Length: 419
Ligand code: ADP
Image (tube, rainbow, N blue to C red):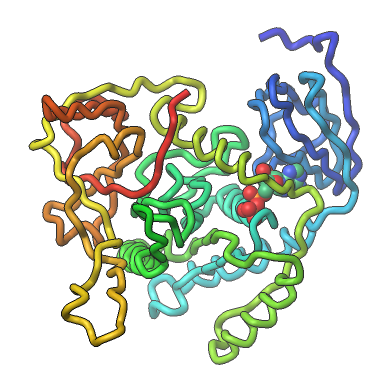
């Protein structure tokens, strides 16, 4: 690639501890490079002189601790501005505290299990408060120091590790690439199947929060087992991103005092209140929906269309589809007079394959038997592209050709319209 500056490029000089906030336009990508100094994107240093490409609609910031000059070459609809007030010092101070705790844990790694445990951070706050961004920074800064912290994503709405509708965990071995995100090596994934903890389900408003809690417990137990056998990842600890359950202005204050109150009896838990960055961009429901679609597309086709998913055909009889929850717990006749049958949120129900499956994303479970579905993580996902009820054949897109690792599929409400 030519290293000379294109005619449309312009330079931005950043003073120390300032950041350049960028929203790439709807229609054209952006290129930029670091001409001098040092700078990072959400905790990951950018290499000098190399042109980096950013896709349309990406919102991010380039922060410098000591000053930098950036050269940008983007479409007219890209917007950017420089901010000299950021909460980065307080964020990096949190990192320094975590770093000390990791070192302490490492020094005790042959000792008792409590002191060899590195820091476990959970980031909470409203939607669009910068939780994912802070999680990213803490992970990337730790990875830069050579740790392999575990990233746990409990946000079923966006899916920063895999497709939306899942909770997942993965070790972070290198600072996170600002464009490519988290590498999808072998994440530990549990399929919840919906994009909010309470979801309109088969026409019924069924609150699946119980299922969500059960899956979080399963994920936690599996991670706990992994940490028991791996002193290195135990000492590096975890960063857990959550979803914005706490909606509404003014809740931040409440959230912090509420947490302090609830955790009073747990002296080992510190509650640290951090400021939201002025750069965090609010995303409309429509934008979120679009980015969910992009995440699913990326799972099958890759970020740069670099994967070749395979269209497979299976007989209905080769696959077993299940959904979790929604079914009534007991017949009305078995209940006390006046009581309504409640949906059992963790009941596994076999589903007849029908046109209703069209355009849904299903998870391929590692379960061997239906009873194991809840406690099993998932191998991956398929996307239903055709249901031929007459011939009893199902056509689906999968990341690769051949048999899926299991015939047990889990159905939720995760849909996608391939465009
Ligand atoms: P949350 O996880 O709380 O919903 P995010 O961390 O995903 O919030 O932030 C919302 C959006 O704002 C994301 O697109 C993110 O890239 C963007 N963003 C966060 N911090 C900044 C910043 N300092 N400058 C520009 N964009 C930012």
